[in-house]
Length: 388
Image (cartoon, rainbow, N blue to C red; front, side, top):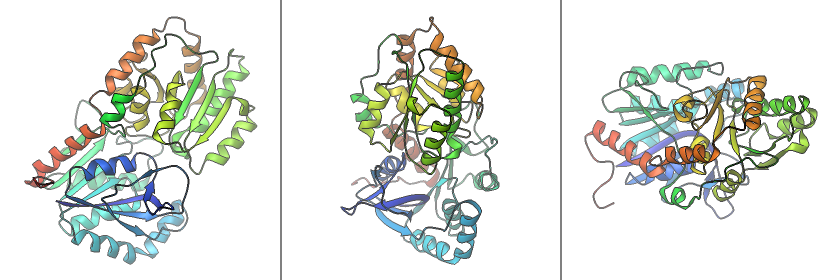
């Protein structure tokens, strides 16, 4: 089958002509490319930048003009150019057998509606917080309503997360990961039995408001004012629109000497950051299923994260594979970190072993097999020919 992916994800061309993107998007597109005969990616064109990973070499890329501005201005730009975006999506979809839309996202939502109009077999995957939270927007609610309304038949509706009951009738949970089988096998998880001196914390992900990195910085400032000794060091791994404001915030809070901003790292360098840390801190204000949770745990690294999305299902009870705190609450995060760093009773070796064990079987290849199984069942035909 020929698959077309319509995404709001910004991509760019490197000097060697390869199309690049950031986060787990390139890896997940590789996973989809492995289970379909061909793949076309309709993405938003962006300017060149450092870091990122290549999109599948076998993929055909259709680059859309980027909307202007952000938030309301971006939506107005899309509305003003609606004919262009719908025309490009329709032309691409007519040439393929099935459509995939990673949601939420404006271009992706247009892709979902266009695929439904053209009656194309559809694979929709919602990556935000399904239950809703303080960061939920009108667009998020509309998108979730569409998923519920059109689930079933040839429409495969997946939500990244985990839970005892399905997200909605006809909708299924699915985990999210960027770890390959080979990568997981090559990782030697941390096995040291005590915290470093000083302790080392790491954050991994996009630097944008919903990720709550400002909450981590404010928690660090609280710990310093309270006289915690030794103070932990923090590595902020990733890039995004909030990088410069976060650097200014660290300086204003008097903790610039404790924080290192690494910028976008490749997978090898990110693995090195995890290996050299004691805890991974992911203070998101909203999340579905963070790939960084599994990345950290693969390295034997316990995770301190906000109570968002699938966090409690992945982390388990406090102290099992990490700890969960209230989102957007710097004093709560500071209190949790103080409690962890001052504790003399945590069996770090056992916790690291539990973290690593949880990741086994949650690789990109396993994710692709699950997607393939669900699509084959719904569409009544294999996603790839026997000769592929």
